[in-house]
Picture (tube, rainbow, N blue to C red):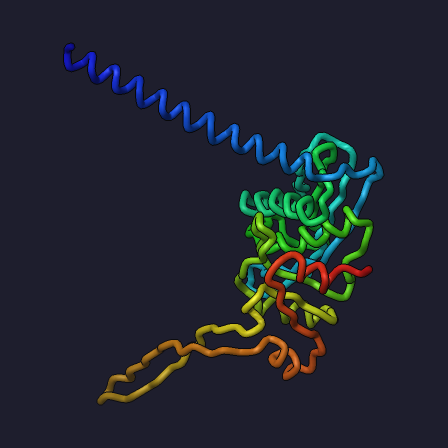
Length: 253
């Protein structure tokens, strides 16, 4: 057998193996989706809606409290995100995950529904980042169950497919914004009630005619609730490790 014939046969074998594993992988995904679908109950055809307060950090570094809305209407299983303001891909991905988590948490199928996510009361023309994922998940769960999210509370945090809530940045600015809006409760991811940040320090020394300025950073840890109390705000800070804890804190029965 010629060398190039051996190479050709080897290449065909590799392609066959790749095709085999791809078929197995995708059929596995289809089976998992089918199992999820079988285990979920269908929602009625009545449109459902709920909203939750989300907190973001603006380009100038300040916090902003906005409204995240979820509307569930008869459809074909689409996850739709309002284009006003525009949303970056990571925000779109977090909305997909929020819809998935809401289905798994409630046991209700959205395969014959369209879920429409939107952000209101924001001056931003472009929103980015996944930190609204937890809030949108809570709002979707409230909509499915016909309940309301507390109007005097807000939450920040990413959402993972297993329902756990991930940590985010800018929690000091977000907590301050929630307090300035008069909210009673601000929910943060597990482990972020206390925040460590780096504070700039400066030392000056005169060496002959030369002024030497040395700048360095030192870590400082603060408790968000104590920080707000020092500023005469009464906002409470709570932590949530997963969507179940967030629902218990935020959804009114």
